[in-house]
Length: 420
Image (spheres, rainbow, N blue to C red):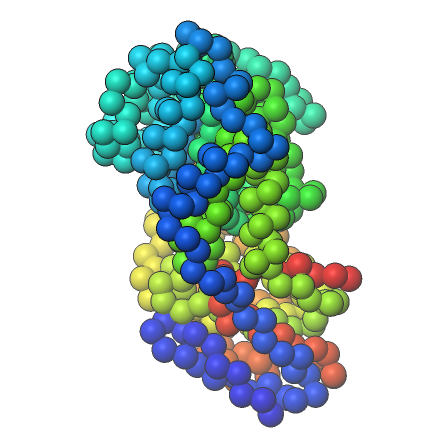
């Protein structure tokens, strides 16, 4: 037997795996400490990709809008904003013709004071606004239709601005593959109609963290960014510890692509072939404090486990207080077929998590070790439950013979690229 220790809440729990089944552990990859944010930002603007400076793309007297999404608070925003304003002014765009616009898509809108605080004195002389797609007085304009025949409507003031600049964080996004680019654009300027149509793609398991190729949501977001005619972008790469690692300035798609490549070269792990069983933990507290973290951990091994195989999930969920709506949805949508029907009929915000869970459960057997009550873990969430990891592993290993087992002790800090 091989002892494998897995994070669980504030402690670790042990799983004993037969040596003939055990293939190993996939640990998160780390990167040495980066230069200071000041150095990262100044280097990006001194040496933009393809040598393209923002000042060379603007016309004197033009109007500029700088778009930010829900990740704005984690960015070295004042440093980046100062460099952008310097470039705009060098090109003849005055501060009174420049606006910053903050948005969170379908989430709770920014408060104006919150946005002003994030920018500080950097934005003096500029306009600062917040985007709320549910604002009944919001003026929008159509910029085109995607290949899925979804009409893209954006704020009219953004469409009419001669210069559109994105500032985005690039790290794995639960549904868009990576944050940034089109995700930033629609969060900050998308209409309720367009955002709602895109939300329907959140139920697809192909729309998930670290996946761009074949991701229907990413494809929609990319098309929207192209239609909008975004002028320039600043993309900041973040690692697992939420520290900025690299900044890219230049053309929107080029900077986004370079940021994704940088992240994957430094943090993704390659695995040859699929396995019959994966032993997974979100990474202990705080990552496994809620069911959302547990579900995201499950989704990180979709490509790793053979369809019909098993996933053993250790997630304490000590801070979970599932809402009444969520519990009602679980009771209504007992399987993937019912969940799909309800999602199409209602498209209620948050229900995509139920649909994704049911679709995942239709592909794999999932054994859960958690602190959740049995009535919730088994009867509502629909997991096969076990008192400890050894019991769960015995259930998962039944009948697989010499089938392979891989452990991911920190799944939310692991990006797997599986070669089949």
